Image (cartoon, rainbow, N blue to C red; front, side):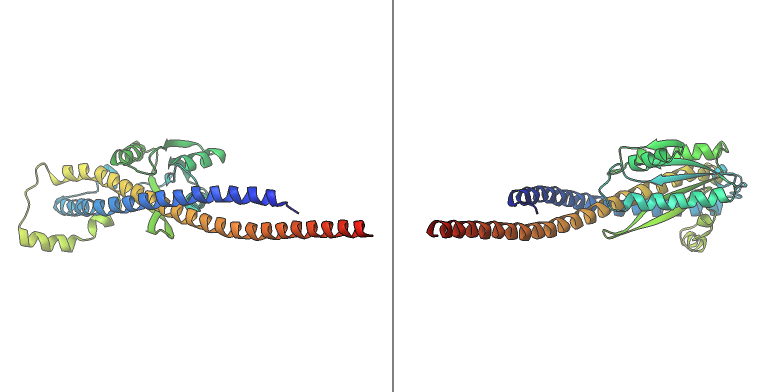
Length: 297
């Protein structure tokens, strides 16, 4: 049975741990608010980018000759996984890696090669530990990703696709639903899905009927060729922001649960300490009474 001093030391240790988890919860909460604000600020830009692509595609004579829209027989697929640089975020990293490995098994079952790109130290270390070759690892910005970080990842994917080293690129990341829920999303980014250019054309035609026709300079095909890489960068940036918000939400929830568990453990240890102290007092009383009886005998 643990002594009173041992229980006191354990209670003091758990209290110190609870202070740390509480502080980490507050930090994650503040970062989550900033991440949500960045997502909301980015949405109008993404919507406008999509409108420009739809309008330019409508004016183009043909979009099938553009490199990022060309579809080939899938022999090699790149999986880009977005994870965090740090742990202590519950199942945030594990669930996205689990989905990525399930996708890899399906692709290899179909006879396709898989190339790995990863964002975040946790994902990179897990892949290397399992013996996978990582084509490129991007680290150091999972808490606060910038547009330049998305550009670096997008440029590598575009380079692999245009050089025909891969025939498809899939993005796997956590989509932010709420601080309690992060949903794993599997999204094809290359080739650029043509249905994105087809969707919304009726709305675009109605808008142009009201505003009149546009004159494109240079040709719409050339403009669209420049817009497609920017679209890929925008999608990756949005995914990085969603992943950053998901990480902070998962960390905030995990630290809140850890603080709650620490409080429950403190209560349990305090009860055990009181019982141990009562047992020591009872034992001392019995020893005093036994000594007194021995003196009077």
